[in-house]
Image 1 (cartoon, rainbow, N blue to C red):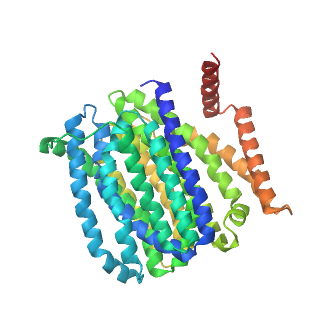
Image 2 (cartoon, rainbow, N blue to C red):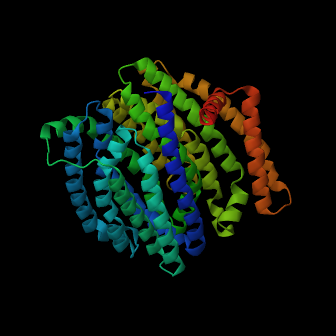
Image 3 (cartoon, helix red, strand yellow):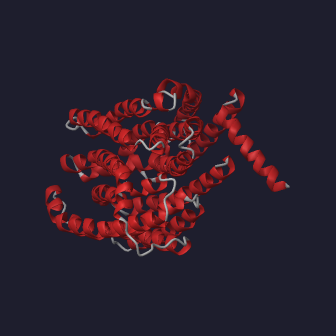
Amino acid sequence: MNNRKVLTNLLWRFAERSGAQIVKFIVELILARLLLPDDYGLIALVTVFITISNVFVDSGLGNALIQKKDADQTDFSTVFFFNVIWCVVLYGFIFCIAPYISKFFSQPEFTAVLRVLGLQIIISGVKNVQQAYVSKNFMFKKFFFATLGGTIGAAIIGIWMAYHGAGVWALVAQQLFNVMTDTIILWSTVKWRPSKVFSWERFKGLFSYGWKLLASSLLEAIYNNIRQLIIGRIYSSGDLAFYNRGKQFPDFITSNVNSSIDSVLLPTLASVQDKKDQVKIITRRAIKMSTYLMAPLMIGLASVAEPMIRVILTDKWIPALPYLRIFCITFMFYPLHTANLNAIKALGRSDLFLRLEIIKKIVGIIVLLLTMNLGVLVMAYSLLFTTLTSQVINSWPNRKLLQYGYLEQIKDIIPNILLACVMGGIVYPIKYIHLNNIVILLIQICVGMSVYLLGSYIFGLESFRFILRIILSYVKRRSN
């Protein structure tokens, strides 16, 4: 796999994620002005159950198809038919238990909202194997058109319904239309179709690898969303809305950078899984590059958070400010997790992957139980501790597998982190200037970008030089 092809697919994936997230972000800002925090609290609670259910949609088999070097039409068709049948059964279960969940959280509208929004489980089941096929064959350009088409259509519907007083149903329609349109476009542009074949032998082989990733993903999904369930049960919908709104901004950035790298990194590493020295080189490059991009974005966002919220969301969302800053620091280290875990998956060690998830979740649950009655803010702060411990745990196996341990990884990213912190220290005090919030925000953004790029040039950061070489090479080819 040459660097040019990897970079091209990474750029297409990044363009797809960025385009979709930008449109979605703008829509969220408009809806935040039209809808009440309680509407977002309800949809956030429902989304927790949809997110956990979607883990079962994949069942780890999508990653198994990507990891298997000789996966053929029989493998893909087998996984497709299993997914569709399984998703119908899963939706039926969600449909039946919805009233009981509604009663537990004392949310009368919950039943209808969960039953309607839960339809995306079946739709995602139809789309899942197409996504695996696109990823395995490095056809990430297909994702761009499918995702952007669904997002734009969903944006129009969501805003129109919210403007006409639909309340929480505007958010339901937006999400459901998005995944449905995304699936239709992907099926129209990707030529793969299932054959009338199902092999139990192939299924068992794929599932032997995939079930460990399923269990790992399930632990991750439950753990990542259990705070929302606790906040929704012990505290209020408003508290949950502010918590989720604080998460939204850093998640908007992280999902673009991290998910783009994640989706391209696994098939890239899997293609060289027999050459550990190559796996180490690619993993190291991914950690350096993603941190170089993520650190200034997260530190910068934390530094401009207050004027940004006042300008974009209005003062009614100011209680989300501390949560936003906490999530910025937490998400800044996500590329470290992603690269280490993808290396482990690419080497076929899904058993090791599962053990890591169990250890991390035990630590996380203990911390959560100790903080859940101390307030929503304390629960959020506990994420900083669990993030640090998870970094060490995720990187530990690669100390032997790749001879690339945690201390060496930290040494690789320290220059990026330090420069981002210097930038944040310069940007943050600008908010005290007595100017309009919009003007302050624009000044902060311009100063932050200038400081980081100038610092990268002066100190000759490796990732900066790498990106610059690629850009100059691309410009040279275009000019010829």
